[in-house]
Image 1 (tube, rainbow, N blue to C red):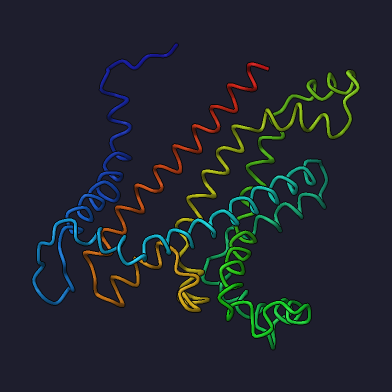
Image 2 (cartoon, helix red, strand yellow):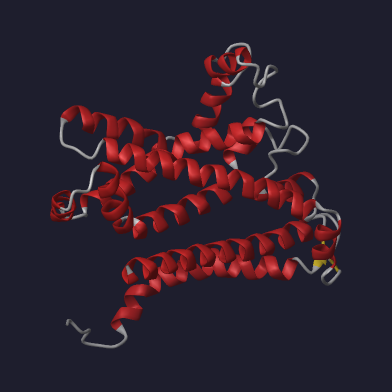
Length: 293
């Protein structure tokens, strides 16, 4: 095993990343925690209010409403992107120029900017001029536009997000599939396992670490959704698409409530940490169950 000549060398190599982490993450989070104890409209001097910002968020029902909207959005995005990504990865897990073209085409959506994607789908979802919007209108869904109905707008945004990030999920799943030894499938086939048996007993168990990574990444992406909401719905209609990050933006730049926005930042961070730890716990539990088998 290789060992550093000096014990300080690993820490020196980590220093640039640690400095960036402290300056751009830990320090702003600490400032937000400090500001959450004040009432400040950016115009008058800050006024200390203690935990009042947190109690008002809970008492008004805004926090639970925003949390419900964000969780619904994230649930659709995570499940949709992981399912489509896995199916596409299994479909293109083969050699060939055409398959390579399909891979690049699917992944290209991920590298396009969120604003460009939002503008494109605003046109596609338009009930009068958009191909997708008119198709749904003929089916009796969102006749006035998918983005205009409180019951459909959030799912429309989630669908756009799934369309954009599925290419990322596909590439990660594809790497995981190609890392599975072919001998495993040969042994399963000799034991009489069919296509479903090989997937359930070989592919899926060995893809669990990849699945945990994709699920965590998709969860973080969905919780950070802002551009697609800002461009396509501005949190409407009737606040039905006001997810956490956009609600924070509204408090700061539209309502000038910096203290309440800072309180939402702290709650948002704690929620992300809890969900990530829960996901990692579920993955480790699954890994333990697989080893016991």
